[in-house]
Length: 120
Image (cartoon, rainbow, N blue to C red; front, side, top):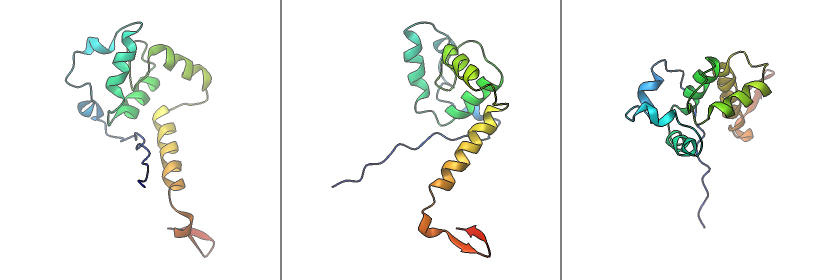
């Protein structure tokens, strides 16, 4: 019996030079500024990208109007922005989600109460 592995979630790196590590760094930029069914193909470029969330956060924070960024089309980003007008910084939002996920991944048996505080 083999253990199933869940794919690792993309993470916010916080690296200001994230674009230099993007999966799209060596392709023609026009590939990401397409319409219709071609957008699905463009989104595939983003799926294994190590800086996908940095890219998406940048596009959402700067309200990028055109192109596929971080695996989302302009329509998908507009929908997300309309649904979550309360998010002032998408980079900070994704970082807080990432921290919560990392905390949740700590096995509860490894936490112990010391003087009223949890420690790992």
